[in-house]
Amino acid sequence: MAENQYEAFIPYSRKDIIYLCLAEGHLDDTAAAEFQSFCEILSAFYHFRFHKTLENIKENYQVFDPGGDLKPLYEPATEEYEQMEETVVHSMKHVLERANYSPLPEKIIHRALESRSLISLRTEVDFNDFDQFLCYYRGDVDIVRTVKKFYFWEKEETVDILERLVLLIKFKGKGYFQAQEKQTKRDTLDRKFKPGKMYIYFYKNIPKFDIELLFPNIQTSMTVRDRLMVAVPAIGAAVPLILKTLPNMLLLVAAILIAINAQSVLQAIDVEEEQARNIMPVLVATMSLLIALGGFAFKQYSQYKSKKIKFHKEVTDTLFFKNLANNTSVFQCLTDIAEEEECKEILLVYYHLLTSSEPLTPEQLDAKIEAWMLEKTGTQINFDIQGPLQNLQDIRGRRKESESEQPLLEYDAQGRCQIPSLQKARSILDYVWDNAFRYNGAI
Image 1 (cartoon, rainbow, N blue to C red):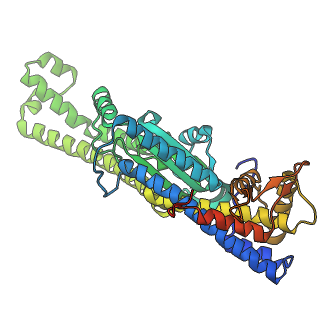
Image 2: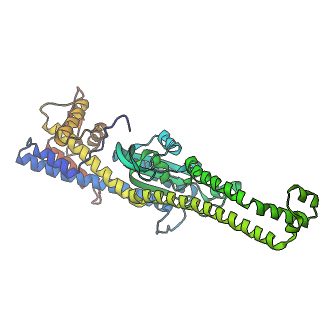
Image 3: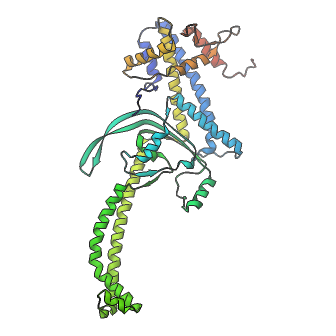
């Protein structure tokens, strides 16, 4: 589990946050109505802003979508293709950070390849197949699960779970994989991905050390323990089988020696020449040996295949029941989450500055919001104060054309936060909203 268990994510809806603010009773009826209208226009503004971000991502992602049904009018040039790729990746990072997701350290991913928790698999992922790779998460928690050990015995295990996980993978082009096929002499026609395409996955409740199972280029095989469970019984069954069929094997060898005129060697293995020359016993011995060995080999192979099928079913169940979205739909989900998070953070900052009896520094404001969330909801969060403060500074407008633009947040000489009144704040937001498009000829 992560050392810092508190996150910036606010696990309540924007509507609930507004309700908690109004329920305190610090705002009279007039101020409460003004605050609600402030929340409404702020939400509309951020919805518009994130809609533009989403449209930009979708426009540039189209050529990388492995399951897309839209055809581009023209193939982009190499420089344009690279720029579109960079735009998608950069915008994805922006949205993930606004949604309060954090990058998963590479050491965690590599440890997952070396460890296993609930699924008994030996796994391998070739990161050289990727042009781009992003992995972000939210929620690092420990849960207790009951797992079955040796048929009837059940055991409780503590598993480190990532509550939400986002994976972006951009595979290298066809040329790379064609060269790999020639070099390794391995047919990759059965691969589960398309070269040159970008895959985005959104999962819930993934064990931290089973992350490698999410990769489409994963190679799986049995662990040493599972191989021994197949090999040891096979060896145990093969020894008595060989002892049982040894006379028939000697008879078959004798027949071969007679056929190649090697009677001197025949005397050494103590088999009567007359018996070896009789073709029927030889044929019976040969058939018995082939049937016995063939049946045994088929049985062992069937056990191996059954084990592999069971493994793949476990992987499929994991991916199917924990998948939230794929590819384009991931952008839509995350954009909605980012929009909510931005609005909730700004509303909390503005409300606490509005109702505070004295000016607050960013540090004091941060501590106050965290304490307020703990008191009202019982939830401890690590509030990201710098993000909403910067957002309020960036929103600038004016009430009249003759006035200069004013931000929604400024600092006094002591570094304390200052905000305009609700009436002025709504006017600033209304100005920004009215000037989102300027098609009336105004400059």
